[in-house]
Image: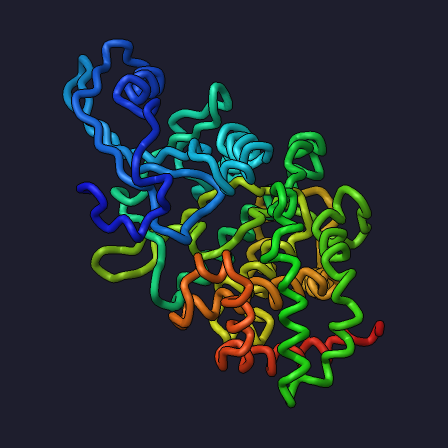
Length: 422
């Protein structure tokens, strides 16, 4: 990328690579990875790793290294993730977090074990892209193969097709099933995966989170079709976040015998997955999940509800993702049998009961993330503005596209008895 070409599409801290990200560093990484001490990097191109909105809790660069070994000349496209060097909010937020330790653990320990279990069961599903290098010192760094040259891409500016959604829920079910086997047979294996999105420094006290329900109640109070719900949400406004955290952390703090506990991705949305389609037919060949920084052992509803709100279109969301989650359960059950899971099997009704029990997480997604998601998708606002300004977020609650959904979702919740306890 030439100087400042398309700069407005990237985060400022990704426009210029840090001084340590140079030929010497990448040469050392590749020498170790290729087991070729004679390897020499002959050319290195470094560009921003992704566009604005694709990620926030890291700094990413795309590097293409041309190099020679005794075997000849080669090219290696790579993605590098690290922490920000520039002073500011991102550096403050990430400096004391567990994000990189969690993701390194996922790439180096957990996902290889999960794939091994699937392979032993005759399932060739790929759960992760190979990690080329990882380190926590002198700074957190992760380097893995770039999926773009392999035909993968993030879906942008269009709804996902039913085939793509099937691929997502199928792979998620297999991941969750294997994690259930590991939790049952190796209870200490996932012990360190206890930090969710909500454990990020200053996240729960940030303006974006604490104003969500406040803005939601304000909107309810002035919309004639919705005012009847104002009393209920006003009463829970000051307590629902703490109750939502109890739901997310239920496995560790309030284990339930009928709970469905899995290793959750924790931030399950379309920008954290890449698809490969057949060049001729357009059929989905694979979906690869990425960004494992907040993986945590939690109820499966953490991923499933995130998927309902952040992956499905309104007509499917207003059905609470019924078909997609039932598909997930079918694949989950089948995979548990294949991997010889010896724990207690969950029923489909039990899965839904668990999802409904975690209604405060539902409320969080509905009141905090959904208005921003719909505002961005409808091109009413930019996500950066929504994240930074409550004035923009307030306006998002009054968009027709958001209110149309709420007028369908709240009666559904009422039918399920969500409002019976107040």
